[in-house]
Structures are given as C-alpha cells and as structure tokens.
Length: 456
Length: 124
Image (cartoon, rainbow over all chains, first blue to last red; front, side, top):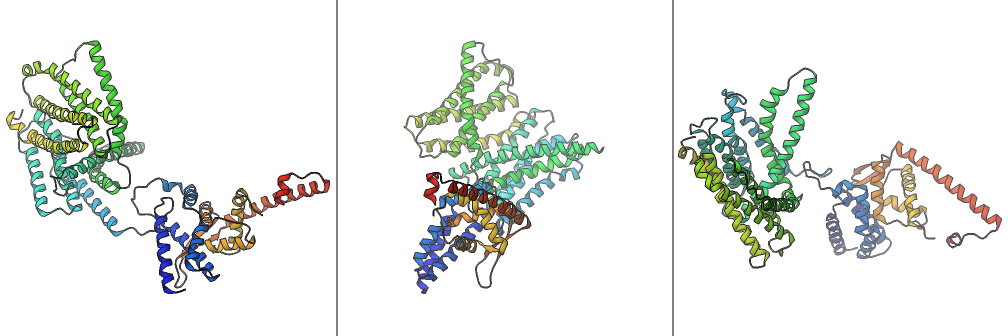
C-alpha cells in the first residue's frame, strides 16, 4: 500500500461520510461508528490481498444501501425525524461557543427587560394603582428598547444606526410623556395603541441592520414579525398555565400568590418573553418551517368563504349595516386581518411561480373585503360630519383609508398577476414599500394628534 | 443453504447477546464472529447490525462506551448487562424449545415414511 492509495482512500471515506451526513436519521456518532466498521472491513480485505479501492467498494456494498440503513435507523431513532429546535446542542457533540455566548447575551437582554419594567416601581410608580396610565403609555418603550438593543448587538450595527435608534426611542418617550393627557382621554388610548406600532418599526431598523431602504430586508422583518408574534402567543399561553398553577397550589397552603403574580411574574415575564421570542425566531429560522404562512394557507380560504357569505347575506336581506359609532374600528380590524393573510402569503411565496388557485382565492378574499369596507364607508359618510371629528374617529378613518388604499392597489396588482400580465414581484415591492406609510401614520398619531385635538 | 430474512432477523438478538456474553466487543468484531460461527452462511447486511445494537442498548440489554485505543481512532464498545444476560437465558430457553419441537416432528415424519412436504425437502 503506497501513500497515494492512502490519500485516495481517505478522500473516498470522507465523501462517504459527507453523503451519510445528509441523512437526518443518522447522527454524527452513528457515522463515526459505521466508519469504524468500514475501516475494519477495508483493512481485512486489503490484508487478504485486494487493492484499497476494491476493498472500499466491497466494504461499502456490504454495509448496505443508504435507504435501507436510514429506514432501520429511523425505526430505532424515530425522534430524529422530528426536527428539534436546537436549544442544547446534540449530545456527544460539544456545543459551539458562538451559540453558547449568543444564548448568554439573549438571557442578558431578557433579564435587562425584566428588570427595567420594575425600575419605575422603585420611584414609587405602582403598577396597579393610579399610575397604571404611566405604564399603559410607556409599555412599548420598556418592551421594545431591550429588543432593539438585542438586535443592535446581534447585527453589530454601526454607531450611526445606534444613534438613530436612541433618538427614535427618545422621541417615543417624549410622545408618551410630554403631553398632558388625561387617563380617560381618547388621545391617551390612541398613544398606548400606536406607540408600540411606531416603535416596533424602529426595532425593524435594528433588525435590518440599518438597511431600511432594501425591500428584501423589509420583507425579512415582516416574516420575523409573524413568527415572533406566534412564539410570543405560545409563550404567553405557557405563562398563563404557569400562573394558574402557581396561584392554585399556593392557595392550598393559605398563601395568596396573586400579588406576586401581578407585580412580578406577569410584567417581568412578559418583558423577557419579548426578547426570548425574538431569539427563538432567530435560532430556528432555518431549522423549522415558518408557521405564519401555514396559518395563512389554512385561513385564507375560510375567511374568503366567510366574507363572501356575508356579502351574499347582506344583499339578500337588504337590511343595511347597523352604523354605530365603533363600526369603523371593527372593519379596520377586518382589513388588518385580510392584509395579514395577504402579507404572509406573499412572504412565503416563490416570486417566480405561476399563479394558481390559491392566488385566485386570495384575490376573492381581498376584493370581498374591499367591497365590504366600501359599503361601510358609504353608510358612514353621511354620519361622520354629524358626529364630528374626535381623535378616535379621525384615527379610525385614517387607518381605514390607509388600509383601503393598500388593499385596492394590491387587488389590482393581484388581478394583473392572476391574468398573467404582471409579475408577482410588483406586489411584493408594493407591500414592502408601504411599510413606510404605517411608520409615518403611527408617529403622526402619537406626536401630532394630541396637540391638534387639544389633548382630548 | 440460504437462510430466510425472517430467520436471520429472529436469530440476530440471541447471537449478538451470546457473543457479548463472552466478552465486550465492537461492531465489526461482532459481525466477524457471527460470520465465523456460522461458517459464513449467516449473511447480514453489515450496517443493520448498528440499529440492532442501539435497540438492545435502549432496552437495557447492553451498554456502550466510547474508547480510544492508543494511537487509534475512537471506537464504540458494547458490554452485556445483567438484564441482557437474563434476556439471553430466556431466548436460549425459547430457541431450545423450538429446536426440540422441530427435531421431534422431523424424526416422526421420517420414521413414518410418509411424503414430506416439498418445501422442507427443497430446504434440506
């Protein structure tokens, strides 16, 4: 056996291992064990007088086909067919130091978020009593500043971007606290709702590493938002179960755990969960299929059917919509849902794929939502001057117009795409470009509305 | 003689446990021993030994350790446990019963001189 043969053999074995590594059923230690077997067999065969490449071929053949091998390993190790989110690295392989340090940094930011929400309490601002309004207005700052910090660290963003982030959060703090807003004023509620949206888009600035002009990066942030929301809801459900059990079992020994839950577990846990969810999305984005597009697939047809049925019912009964004061808000929410369904279908779609049935369904969904909304707007148009422009009504109307514009143009682009006249990329670009409109609107409501409406 | 797949599968566990009852060993050595014991007539697909070993480990019949012989590559050794020895004893009893019963029936059919089933003759 000369040196040349040996290097050839090593190359062949390495290629064989690489091929095996692609099988999920076989983990790395299995590969090592099988390689040991292969080498034993090759040694015996060469000692019996065969050339090394012949020995290699025979040894591989005797090992059995990869398909057969994978099947048998899968029967014994069925858990491997379920992709595990890698929290700890696989057993027997040392965790990479980068993922370990990443985990520690995430825990650091989550802890910072949990502590930050309790800092005002040290200055006498109680979470549950009269100061609740302070927390309502500032919650987004407490929740999202650590998240932006986490992404700024993770993406190693430039100093200039960090400065911009700090300025925008400072601006948010001013918007939340500078105006003399009464607790029961409409402006107070509007700020509490719109500041999170405005600051969430600021987090997006950190997420895309300051590269906010790029449509593709904006789409990444939209994907992130959907997944983050799902993880946050799942963690919140788990937290609810934990809370219920904590209160229940302490109650059985005569200790009232409710104050602890309300003052510590709930606020600190929720703040930490914001960062933890973001970390989960980052950790698993290439490991597990995104959930939001799957939900979109399931619910797009159902919503389309529901809306079409409603339209048919509306025409059939010809009663007319009962125009109440809050009806606009309900239809705003409906448009948000429809827009979400559209957005997350876009986010997962291969832009080069041909239009299919799902695209037609989506068009039906968007068009029926638009028709519904126009009916409502027509019904409301005459009443709105009569009611006057309060902050709430102005915000609801403005949002309705923003969403209507988006969906109307989306429907037009979608129609062009379904008929094969326009490319899908246009729709994607329209949606990612429109994010700027949401940002401008949210900041307007937070910063401009209160003075314009005399802090009503 | 060609030994059918089912029979190979059924005999695999007692064979592996029997070999490990002698002394601890590793995959390739176990397979070589099976081949020697059967005079090369018991043919396994080499790779399939490992899922079997992992199953025996999960059931607690064997335990494994990774060891590195001086200057060599890391290798996984298997050793039989007390639980495995009990299983081996039970398997031995089962196989003895089956073999005895088969011997009995074959002696009976031969002495009676009746027509043996063609399938059996082909196998003899």
